[in-house]
Length: 338
Ligand code: BMA
Image 1 (cartoon, protein in one colour):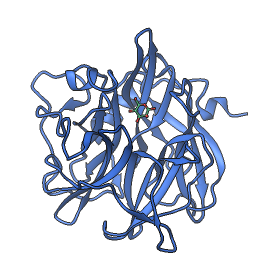
Image 2: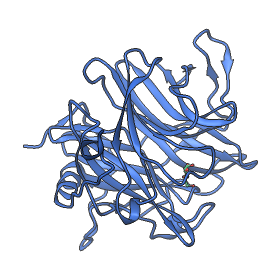
Image 3: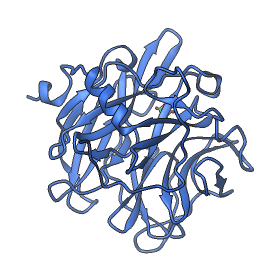
């Protein structure tokens, strides 16, 4: 029997049953987008954001692009995970000595409780170039910025929810300083969240929908079948990039080893809030709520760099889909390792 490890019950889990006759493994919330244009004063678009259960409801760290196009992280709370109350001002960070520190820019956050603290990962600016920013909070009131994990250029930093073999583990996607036209998923380890090493390749690009670049999405979900990794894959068309969502299973004790990856996407831009907006044709997942007793998943994704949407599936269905449709590629670590 499939076991979900390290996740809890979420009593007020956002959930809708699969629509009758719908055949795809992931289905959209019919009231999408849950966050539309101009949700807060001076904030034009909220997308690519991260949410977790907290106290009786949910909290989130949201990517908020302001009306001057600057990129910030805003805190938000919700009782049902669907209607969000977002702060008007960006999160104010302090460094580890308590001095105020604001990142030059901040986007695509991920969020997770590890031990008794909540960790935020995001794409931050180091001397104007993108790399992985890290921070933590105990109470969502004081946010402490930690040292950046890496040098530029890097994006899509995603921590595993627990230490593996004694170390924190961070997925990332080395990149460039522009609209990167390449990208594989790598993994790095750290004993203290400060010094990172033991870098390993996890997965390279695949076919069609993920042939240009890939990047980790939500925090991986631990199961008896392996780490369930939901990620984005990009196709380069004559009309630009198309971002879809896919899934893979990584080995529990050695997550740089890909066990299965689906050759089919699980969600691709189809509806107007995914195909039309600031950047057309983008489905970009950054968070997944998992109700452990039922295996229900609510995946939060950005639509067209403009909207926030939710899609549903179950851990059971997504794992079965990933295994049934699996195809490994020469760029995957197990095959491509020197
Ligand atoms: C990526 C990131 C994402 C964005 C995507 C599509 O490089 O910047 O934030 O959703 O491009 O524009």
